Length: 475
Image (cartoon, rainbow, N blue to C red; front, side):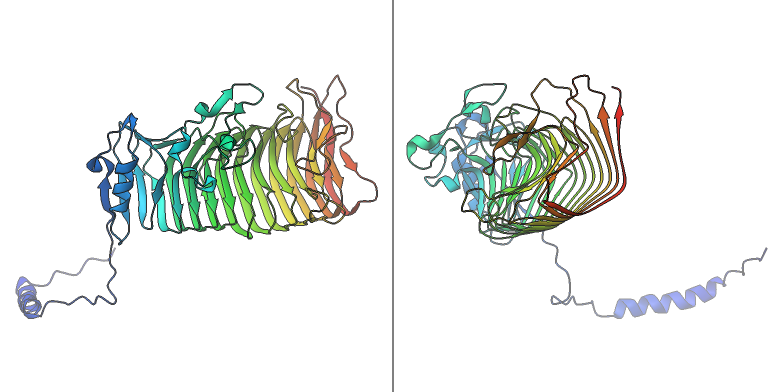
């Protein structure tokens, strides 16, 4: 073992240290270069209480909240805080660039239930609205509540009957109710550590936005209320949704295209339960969808798992679903869906509508237990092509008393059609790979199961089956 060298004599250390300290002391102070030195911007913080908010849940705090937002300096970021232990009742409030609502844990921002709480224009009916803004968001661990149950006119376990403000003339149809949170034509949006609760209509609406992060957001909507979608992403690009928990009546995550394409959506590490589709592309689909990834998602007791409703001529390509666990069951047929774990359809909404195509889909490492089979349906002018199913475990069994034996083409197309249950129904497809797929059927005494694979004659071409297995099991 080598021995350490002896330390230098103290006289040598002193002879080096003293001149060095004197030299450093005589040096001029270092000057920072503002052109190259990084600057750290600390958030400017304003409390709504300091602007007069009472937070008693009875008196409206709209003016105080909006005054705090409007008082934020132009230099971002500015955090508008809602102290805990209070409920802040409000009409529509509007965010501006650089503002983040900091709704602290234990605080609730409560949307008003009256028509006069919202702007005259129906497309501005939100509790929280940001338009043409950048660097905006909501965080803090608190709650935004839309009081959705106050919009129910008749409670029904099958489907609630809801208020519609169509009598005002501001809108048509039976879906005239306010949304909860909306970002329209915004950039760099961040929603994190937030609970969104009881929307009267759509919960979180992302429209024509760029660069959106939705992280650690919990969404809860009444399970019997129609149209209370979880997250609707419309004509927006570069969106990430991660670590979210969505429990609601209608579609949970729903990309749509009305006025432009939708690219680069990533959804990961999330949990979903819904009486409709857990993930649904469409049905608004006038423009293209491309480059979407869904990974590590759990779907529980939903009416439909992974869905495509392409009805308006837009094309879909380059979509991946991976590492997903699904359970789907029957609910009342007034809800779209027939317990399909995977549902891929394109057909014209109306007789004069265009037909969009769906291509290059990958489903890998999918496990499902469901009351119905997979439905893959293109149309004459809108084929499904290059579909790949790799490493799937599909279990089929019945556990509800709802009637089966129907194929659901809605909206539009053929509506509900009588059809025996099959493991995978296929029509109008060109290019399908089924690789290492294990299909298990319960030994049903009612013999409701029919074929593992159901092809519509002369419409399915270029099929590859590798390691496909189908077998019965006893429950």
